[in-house]
Length: 273
Image (cartoon, rainbow, N blue to C red; front, side, top):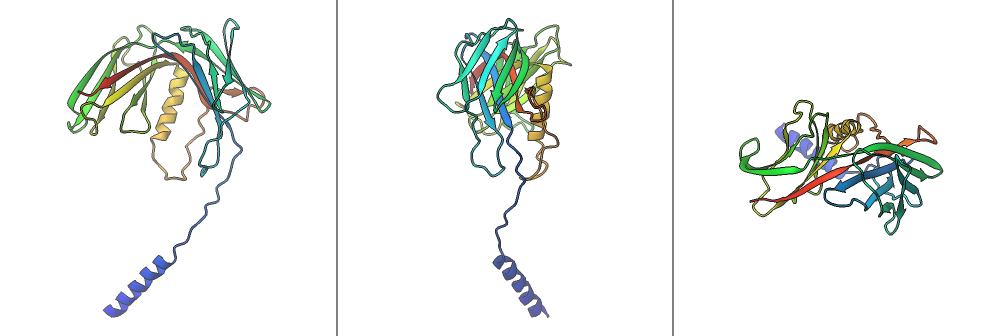
């Protein structure tokens, strides 16, 4: 009886090993949508005149490249009617402006004309606090065995504020992102926290801070929660389509993806001690 069981088991193993087959998954292909990457960042202590906007489209799941959008008309208009043109100079899909004029609390409208349709978005350019100090703790993290770094800044007083934080780690291909609202911390000192077991003396972290609107905060909060949800494997779908503030004025249902925002940007590099 045991011999029969062993032979049966061996037969099953050989059968499964010998029956490997490549399965082609037939995925539905939706019409491509315009994707707008329009973050106007005014680095502190600069003129902020050089800015760029990137346009692409969505593509198939298994595509090895992201299609760039060439030939679009792209410009930003301020509340006084001044037009700042963004021109595709050298790289396809990258539209550049060399004479942009950033003004705190000024409202700007982005206009994109592409494939006979007009897309617009309006946003205000917000200020951003200075990064005031940095602290390092070599016994940080949950278990106390990681290097922990805190970047401090003072909340803008007497108003509701929302912040977008980014930390570039030399050991990660993609930066760490986060958003923060000051609802429970108004008029106090705030900080961005980062810790890692990989960091060592001589490594450089770059911390970036932007003041953002409440609408952009809500958009990023949903986007980051879905990106970090990790709920469904390679073929899972988002729980919802996340629409930004770019509206198709010609055909509302053919909406664009992405967001148009403007703000001052505070950035600081820190070398691990």
